[in-house]
Length: 44
Length: 225
Length: 230
Picture 1: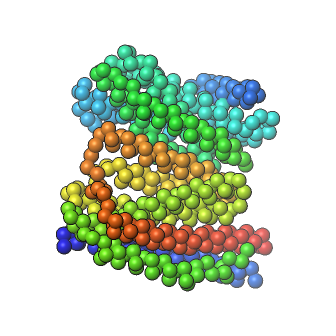
Picture 2: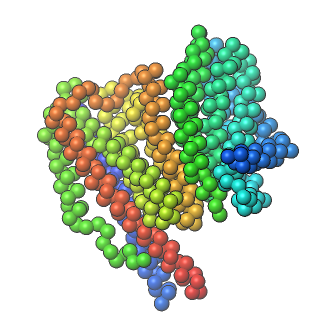
């Protein structure tokens, strides 16, 4: 099982990068949804 | 067609006149490139063989830096005086405004490079005279690429914040192929016997054609308000 | 424009992509034959290369979105451009991270300025600059226009970057980080499967990010309204 630890690190890195990106999009979406709610409240 | 050439010529003349009235941009850029050349000499041992290897790359890098700094003012001046709106109202092809600026920037940069060539040759002990013709060809083709993309990106960055930092940020990555091609072509010319690489020359021509066409197709939209 | 109510991502499509990803991972990690010289680390090749391909497709979408915006002035094309650019950067981040992880055990060094990796690096920088440009222009139409122009130039630059770096490397050879040679047919099948999987991930991510941009535009609209009402 030559170089197995490198392989594992590589796959973990791929997962981290995509999950990190998804998380960043989700966070931005949540803050936007908060702002929509706030603006709708102010408008009323 | 003659209308376009005439309008471009008028804009070109205007740009050149505006610059030579003060000449500050030209002198500042010249000194800047000199500083870069001197600083580069501290990063390696400038023996003749090392100079032949590193010299051309450093020279073109210095030209790229100069380009990304001196191309800014062209559009900033227009914004400060709001002359762009007046220019756009004129019954001319809007691309001729860009073409005039590109031509002016091209000539400025070429002038800086030509003035600095003998300085570079002396400082790094490189004999440029025998290869002057082909070298000027490489300079012209490379500078055309820098001026074309630089003028477009200067119009882009003039509409954004942090524009002085943004222009190099946008320009330098896009010009990486020009850096590679021009440097390699110059290195080829400095070899013994001097060889003019057809591959790199064709590449530079392709680069120029691609981006001039792109500038012609979409550049005018950058002038809208 | 009621965008926050409509579901952008259907459950079936998410499930489909997950299944594809699972199949591709199984293929890459278990089904594909082990390469002789490099050992297990070679299995990273499947996702390394397919990420690059999907990254290219993403940047192609930036080009398409940019051209379409200039022609139609419909901001939705600009939403597509920014979504594709971010996802493309994510894919090329994968390429740039997995490349060195592959290189280190095989060549002993993390980076060799190999042609493909160097080009990937430059591409990554180019589209990160695109994203930075966007953060520096506030007004939506102006931002869309300048980004579209830069996006077109950046996309046109891609083949020029690849050729110049490749030809430079042909003149000045260096160790190449990449496949050792011809591919076993089973490896080809796994590679194509991985590419399909990454394309699925790309599509999903772009759709999610597009939705975020649509929401952002909606918020801008609300903000304008509330300013007017005060």
